[in-house]
Every structure is written in C-alpha cells, then in structure tokens.
Image 1 (cartoon, rainbow, N blue to C red):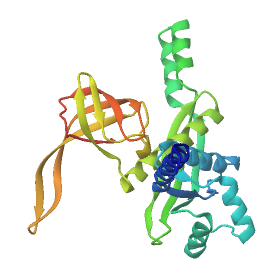
Image 2: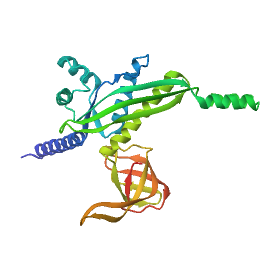
Image 3: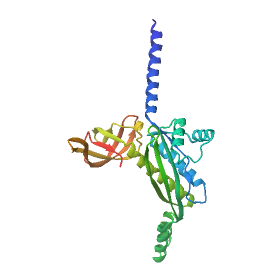
Image 4: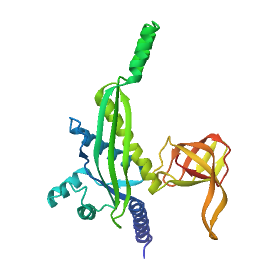
Length: 287
C-alpha cells in the first residue's frame, strides 16, 4: 500500500471524525418551534403579534442553547396540513411538532399591548419648568423617552416527547422609547428576554471554574452551551449537603461573587472577576 494512498485514507478519516463531531454538537441542541402568537390584546395594529413572535425567535436563537425551526418552514407545514388556531389542541400541537422535527413547541397569545406617554418624561418636564432649568432641563427631558409600552403574553412551552406542558404562565415586558413604535418593540424584546430566563430554569446553565490565572478566570463551558461574550455570571460555592430521610437531595450553595465573560470558545470561556472571593472548583451560573 503506497504512502500516498495511506495519506488519503488518513485525511478522509480525520474529515469524517470532524464531521461527526460537528454533527454531534449540533444534534445536542434541542429544537424549538415557535408558533405565531394569536393577538387578543385589542391593539389596533395586528403586526404587534408578529413583532412579538419575531422577538421570541431572535431571543431563543441568540441564546445559542437551541435550534429554532425556520418560520417559513413552519408556516409551510401548517398550510399543507390545514392547521389553524391550534394553540388549544394538544393533538395538533404534537403532530405539528413531529412534522417540524421539533423537540419543543412554544404556543401562546398576546393578551395586552399598550403604549402611552411616559410619566417620568412628564415629571422631568414639569420639574424643569418649575425650577427654570432652561436648556439643561430640555436636555434632561429629551434623554427620558416620551413613550412607555407594556405587553403581556400567555405562553405554553410543550415537550413533544412527553406531551408535558413544561412552562405555562404569563410573561410581561415593559420599556420606554422615543416613539410609540420604538417603545412597543422594546417592550416585546423585554418580554422575550423574560421568557429566556424562564427557559433557563428548564435547562439551567451550570459551569465550574477550572483555573484562575491572575485576572483571568477559566470556566469549563462555552459557546456550545449558549454562553455569550459580555454575560455577567454568578459564582457560588457548595457547602453542606441537604439530607432528607437519609438521602442527599441537594447541596447548599452560597453566592460568593460575579465574573464577566470576555472570551468564548466552543467548550470553555475566559472571564474577568467582577466581585467577591472566588476559588477554583466554584460553581458558575446565570443570575
């Protein structure tokens, strides 16, 4: 067997191993199908439900923890199968999940969408006028956004494998903006971020401090686990075990500090200490 032929086999083998590794990493991520939200808020612009749905899609995708079924693919399946308003039909939800290849399905409805004048901006304007602050008061008034918006949505997060409803609650988001549209978009984004925090309780992020070198803190999780540069994480230290009926059911944890992610790799990250006394082996988690 020639050296050249052996070399080709070696290269092909390495490529196959790398491909399998990449596929494994991708397969490890669960897939979520986000159903278009039903708008029962009474808000005149029907696009608000589309904006909220889009913000949920973006937030889930940006987390890095899940793969999201493309909206166009989901709409195509729904059209082909004649699915409409399936939020209250568990059987159709499960069937759509299966057709979309999703592990989870997010369904829900937008129950509130309001936007109005921001009371804080009005207060700043009144105080500025009262004390004659002139240009300084005008600048402060411009800094405070004139409009404030609030949205609420009732959601259900369903496990396709078991049919279990993992999350069922009302999610809120409120923000201000320079215009009504900006305020509404910001409120929808805030609600999507609140949903992500709820989702983190289902699949919580946990890491360990693997090494501390000067100002650099190395943790054993990275982008493959959805970690992002700029995140501030809580550092906790394990204490005594909690024993119930002779069995260890938990381990006490005490928060001891915070670290900020400055560099992210696939399977580890580099952080900088923000506060507290941290040690190698401490637990790292999201707040």
